[in-house]
Image (cartoon, rainbow, N blue to C red; front, top):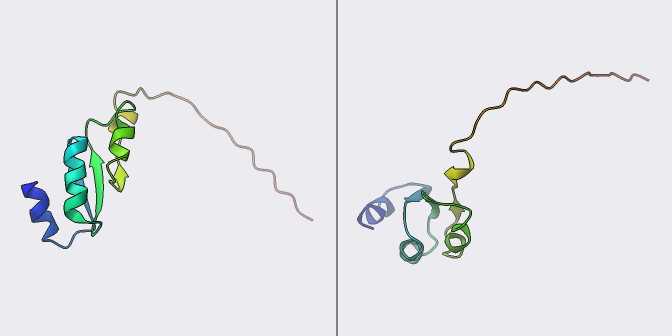
Length: 85
């Protein structure tokens, strides 16, 4: 919360709340009073995203969507057909 107070004294467009608990996010939302966009990030999963969304935060980042994924090897061939009149 100390860093949030410092960030609010600067000219930023958005503040990321990294690893904040839902109660702490609620405090941050109340503290900023909608004057700046807030993004919740860190330890966000499909299991707790609903409770985070209920805090009033503007954005939610879910790193679990891209963590520990495996790349697949595929190609996509596209034939273009030009139709002229």
